[in-house]
Length: 216
Image (cartoon, rainbow, N blue to C red):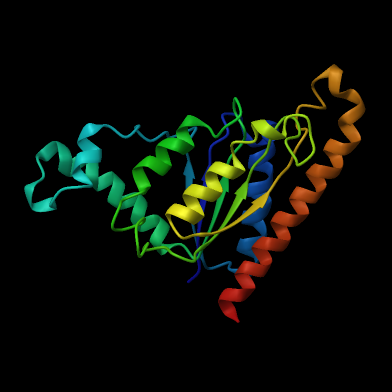
């Protein structure tokens, strides 16, 4: 059966979160193609992971046979996250822009799941797995926009997910999400609405295409 790994990280619920709306659309389209499949849902806002500490980090660079009880417990979580990634036929990640970068909860997931010699390194264990990142943002950081130099979400995740872990990364970018609630952005509401509809359509289209590829 097909397995989708869905990672949400917005601090807001679906009704108030642009990224959650898009990942939900992706999931719906995926499940329509694979009604008997599995969805592993990690909601990093509702159930945050611990940030990587010295115990968990050192466990990743030492022989499991030598682990202390504390290292065993810390490394067990890292292995669990790695196995979820390795089981996935496709991954969708919500990465809203907070203060020009990704949420700290998503960074915690990355730090825990990246294990050198396993999920990262010369032969990453999930290499080639398709990953769709929903990189929502309140303004616009597109090429040519005044704030283009502050775009640290796509650049960072492309480097980590593709360059470090060998994943096949694609982006959906709903932008101007603050326009409906910020009077100073009122004139941008039509552009926001267009971006939102495009993102929802892209999510459904990408999910369906990835699901169909698995059964081809």
